[in-house]
Length: 122
Image 1: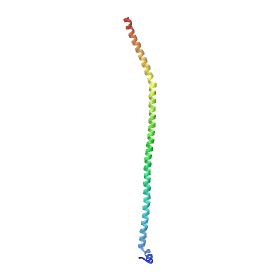
Image 2 (image 1 turned 45 degrees about the vertical axis):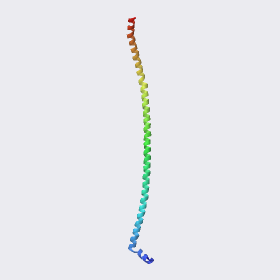
Image 3 (image 1 turned 90 degrees about the vertical axis):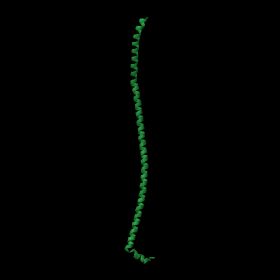
Image 4 (image 1 turned 135 degrees about the vertical axis):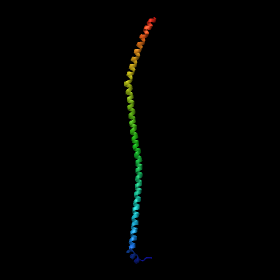
């Protein structure tokens, strides 16, 4: 066993300073490792939070894009339906009017053809 006097003498040697320096380095290393561990845990948590947030944001952005696309699609459907209605409303009556005129003209032409034949046979 080392006595108090011998210990005090040892504390003043270069070996003691070297051991003390080594212990300080180990302590400093331990603090750095602990800080690294805390930072790693914090980084992993932030990364997880970011991934979760990214997934939520992607879902939110995708949902927003989908909602916008649905609204755009509904507007396109409305415009197509309006155009179809306008087309029918503006284009179909003239078709029926010309068909009516065509049929009346054909009926008159048929009657002219038929009446002379009918009068000759009477």
